[in-house]
Amino acid sequence: MRVLLVGAGGVGGAITRIAARRTFFEAMVVADYDPERARVAVAALGGDPRFTAERVDAGDEAAVVRLLAEHRCDVLLNATDPRFVMPLFRAARAAGATYADMAMSLSRPHPERPYEECGVKLGDEQFAQAAEWEKEGLLALVGMGVEPGLSDVFARHAADELFDEIEEIGVRDGANLTVDGYGFAPSFSIWTTIEECLNPPVVYESGRGWYTTAPFSEPEVFDFPEGIGEVECVNVEHEEVLLVPRWIDARRVTFKYGLGREFVETLRTLHLLGLDRTDPVTVPGPDGPVAVSRRDVVAACLPDPATLGERMHGKTCAGTWVRGVKDGRPREVYLYHVVDNQWSMAEYGSQAVVWQTAVNPVVALELLATGAWSGAGVLGPEAFPARPFLDLLTAYGSPWGMREQ
Image (spheres, rainbow, N blue to C red):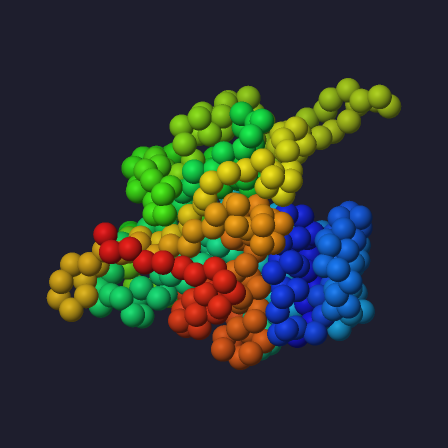
């Protein structure tokens, strides 16, 4: 396997550190719009000859196709933000390469009823091309991070081994992370955080299908394991709700994020001021007026999440809560994966949230390389058997857990 990794930021850098300890691939080309960032990621690996740094504009499909051909890469792993999903998705297909990402094509709210009906859903643009990918015998593995990704694998495991009937699958994400010296410092890309938190959340119900609610709706307190404790969670737009019902029979699917009230109020203020918008606004510059995206300005004013590890303390938990019936009796479980920032920093030099996101696509690529996972078309993680993934994740030194509720 020869991999083109596009994006050498926090998650991309963590991917290289995790992959460097594995032997399933022949080469990994680390490409970024900023060539210095790609070089730094490769240099940190101590001269591993399998890794090469390159520059590429993720929005330039032709350039990505040329880079895939130049390095004879048969896999494109997308570690950029969701704005670049579609150009990279198309470039992989044009080059005849396997494609994998950790977030799917962007949604657009319903123009008249944004908090009742779906407009363009997450992943719709990718699934619209599923037949062509399948016809050409190519695989696009979409949503293969932690959430979406591992959370979807948990849902598949629950359906295959833990339940006879499933009433509800609810992804629940929470943490007790703190960052010294910052009142507001998101542990993940603020661009992506704004996108998923301020868009209308999607809920799935059998018989009704997908529908939307208001941002931060249906608050609940969820008790997270391994000392994290109770965190208030709210509805947030996320790919699992769009992926799970395509392959798993469940009466209801939700995603709730433990953001905390202060974080929610900050996001609401950004929205009130229009600073969550991506369309450009003109501001004075030293050489005349400059058009800039408001959301990009917010991102530029905040610390890079990849640099927060030394200041960060606590744990992050990603998991899937499932309730239903097994052997005629009610059952309720929480399948989860916890990463302690102190451990991920000491072991890999990556803060917990980006490391937890990064480990899952590497596990998935190893399963594809060994043939434990295979397929064609546009497929989510729940389209594959869960047990090989969970066993390999444990072998990577990061075990998962299950709690009977």
